[in-house]
Image: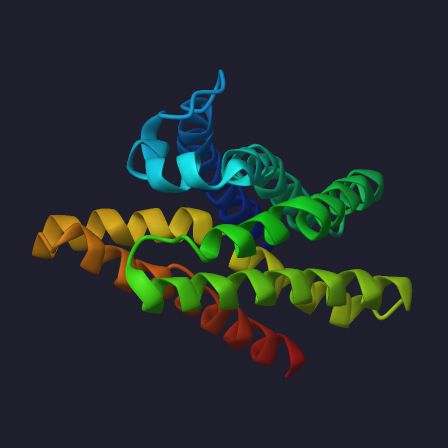
Length: 211
């Protein structure tokens, strides 16, 4: 018996929800490494030069880490409930936009200048931060102008860039498992792999959606 399109759609959404839940839990565990505040916890252990020489670094780092986990879930909720539960969609969208524009993207751009992996990685993360800020602002601008389709497409772009926090780590696991590269070489590669495939995939979906 053929499964109806409605049931297929529900199964697909259920699988997406389960996948997101899995990745969210992983990201939450990473975030909790920095609770309570500790200037040597996890990733910060290799950033002691920045911690000691730049008084603002630690504060901005924690702002980025703590707000990004809320951005990740707020963006997913806004996209997942875009056609149902309108109030949840609107409020989660507002949380996503405010946190992204005021805290997460700005702090991410700052941190990009101190990224591991040298100039290539720094350039990539700066571009990522700028594109994330811009696409989020455009999504906000379009919904204010009631251009719902454009708003949706810009939100897709924004969240694809936001989700690089997850895909970057997935690529890192894959590359280390397959090739055992030098750690700094990994940063140079995943800095770009973390977000470029995401945005290309979304652009494909947007083109398909417009047809």
